Image 1 (cartoon, rainbow, N blue to C red):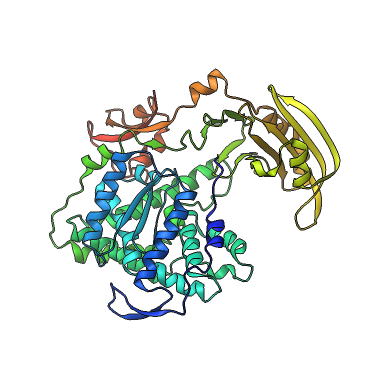
Image 2 (image 1 turned 180 degrees about the vertical axis):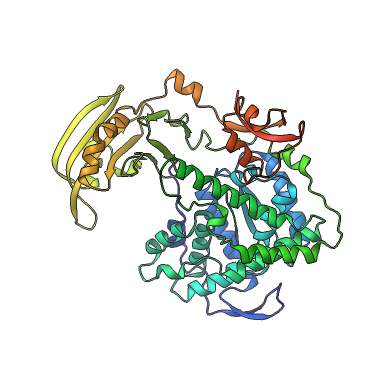
Length: 499
C-alpha cells in the first residue's frame, strides 16, 4: 500500500494539450497513409508527457544493472525495428504484477513481475518485441484517434491506454468516468484483434532480425497462459471462482487462432537461423531481483501485512486472506462476503480524527475514542452522507500511527447479515493494527530471486529451502504445464528471504 498520484488526475490536468483535427501519416510498418489524431512529432510529445505521468504512478526499480540490461536489449531490438530513428526509452517498473505495456513515441515498460517468469533473454525479447511492435505500427496513435472521436483529448486517451495496458480493461473503464462523464466505457477498449496479431507478428519478426528463434513468441504466450492456469487452479482449490487478473494477457487477448497464427509466422521466419537464447546472461541479470511485494509497498507474509517504511502491521484472522494494492490493503473473508479495508488518510483530509470524520460525512451515530495497541483511535458507527448527499449506514475506525499518519479501517460486507456474521473476525483484524514488533521486523524481509543447481529431488526438494511451494517453483521455471523437468545440475530459479 502506497499513496500514489493517479493517471486519471494526470489525464484530466493535461486534457486537450494536444488536440488538432488530425493529419495524414504514413504508417512505418504497412507503408499506407492513414488519418491520425497525431503527427509523428505529436506522437513523440504525447509519449513524453504521458511517460512523466507513468513515473508518478509507478516506481522505477532501483536496480541499475538490471535497468541497463533491459535497456540494452530493448535498444538492440528497436534498432532492427521499423522505427529505428526514434529515441527509445525502456523502463523496469517496481511492480510484482506480470505486465508490459508501451506508450506512443517509443516508451516501453516491463515489470519485475514479468521478468521473474521469463526463462531466457529470447523470451524477454519476445515480450519487448511485441510492445515495440505496438509502437512501430502506431497502434497507440490509432487507438487515440478512435478515442478522440469519443470526446477525449489525445493525451488523455493515450494515458488511458497506458492504464488499460497496465491494469486491464476494468481499470480503464473506471477511470473513463472520472475523466469525462460523456465518454462511453465502450470506447475505452483494448487493442483490437488485428492489432494484437500484428504486434505478435512484429515481435516474432524482431526476434528473427536479432538472431533469436522467433518461436519464443509462442513460448512467452504459453508461460503466461500457465500463470493464468495456476491462478485458476489455486482459486478452485480454495473453493472460489477463478478471476481474471491484471496480467499481461488480461489486456492481450489470446486464443487458439492467435497461437496458430504466430506458430505459422514463426515457422516462416525460422529458416535455419542460429538460435541464441542467452539464458545465462538473463539469469545473471535477474539474480537477486526482488520478488513479489517490496518493503516500500508493504509485504504480505501469510496472514500478516507488514509495512516497514510506514511502521504499521495488521493480522488477518485464520482463513482470511490479505490483498495488497497501491491504494489499499484488503482483509477478505473466506466466503468473500466481507472485508476490512485499510487506507492511508491524506493530510488534507483534516488535522484531527473529528475533523476527518466530519469531512468524510459522518452524521448521526456513535463516536468512541479508544486506544489500539498503544495507538490513538476513534471508532464511528452510524449514518454517513456521501458527496452526492446520499445517506447510508457506515462503520469506520481512524488510527494514528507512531509516525503520525492517520489510517482508516472500514468494514464492508455484501449485506447486513454477512456483516453481522463476520463482525467478530472484522473486529479481530481491526484490533491487530499495530506498530511493527521485533517479530514483525524479522518477517518483514524482501524475497529475492536466487539461482540454484537443480537437485536430484526435483522441485519438491527445492521447496524445502524456498519461500515458494513446489507448484510455485514449477511455475517460476516454466514447468507448470507438465513439461519435462530440468536436468540435474541445471541452473534454475528459486525465491528466498533476503538475509
